[in-house]
Image (cartoon, rainbow, N blue to C red; front, side):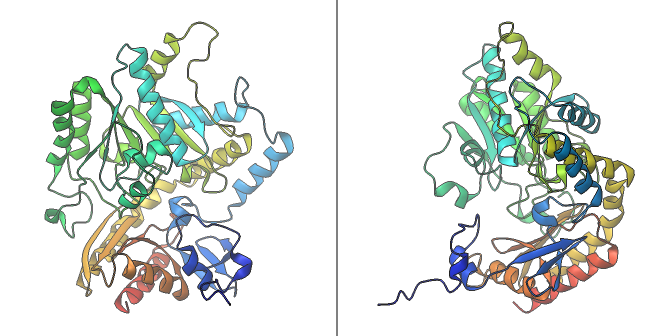
Length: 440
């Protein structure tokens, strides 16, 4: 008897695709075979706008010759060296260049392979920092509802995305969650909302309930990305900073999405004028060309951990096989050079006002319930049709056919274009997005 549920694209069944409706994909594959500039190409050779910068990771556009040449040269000189007890010059050079870009004081950098790994690194640094200071009881990590900090156990435990949490059990013990910052009072406000700074007081409530001496760190995305671009209210991040400082809690900013120019400055920390104790980053670090991530810490945090260990002993029992991979370092160094020489982040500042204005105009469409954005990050939230997420997924599929790759966070449509796009190309992406939403 034939299996009526068997997928039609049998040759594709062997890959289990991440964060994908695998059964639907096999019935309606969305295959990308090439890329150049701000475009992808499908199997028919059609040009498709990359409206999501890959996964927020390709701000310079696809196929940058400078990065390709740097990677090729590094492969010819040194393809790999063990990162435990040995070093490669490119990693030290990259860390030094990043220290120049980071907020003052965040000048110690440890490398990893993905945003998820950079978060795990940050959480372990926070726990160990307090432990070596004689405050090992500080074990709790405070995250936030609708936050996303990767898919490793620590990251999804402190994150607040429901589907990421409900599938895998209890997670990391001691994780607490503040309320998210999406509130009706800020509906249709582009940029920072004028209401909601007091939501940061949730952290103080946890201090009052559990005791500050049980809390190691508070981790937030300056702009929550994966649940639909939640821009912080004015004063919210500073309020978190003040509470953390008062109670000896380390503040961690997850800048995996916002880092390297997405808000118009090097990092969102500089955009909003608030400096954390630890910062995670990935994605745009290598322009998406090779997996790489980093965690930056204040010098005092690292030095405290180093000084607590006996001489000639390993101070931090953590790291990855591909930490500071020489080829990834070459890609990152070439990427940072382009950022500097082309003044890339100034381009974001110039493009953002008109881009956000066009996104804000979506509020006039039927079924649109909110618009949000900052820099070259934007979201259009839609009234559900059928089950939650059905409308968003339908738009994602139809947009691909219409010539645009975008992101769908439930029924929220996210457009986060490459910085390399022209104003006209941004308008064309927005026009496709508008047309597909109207037809939904």
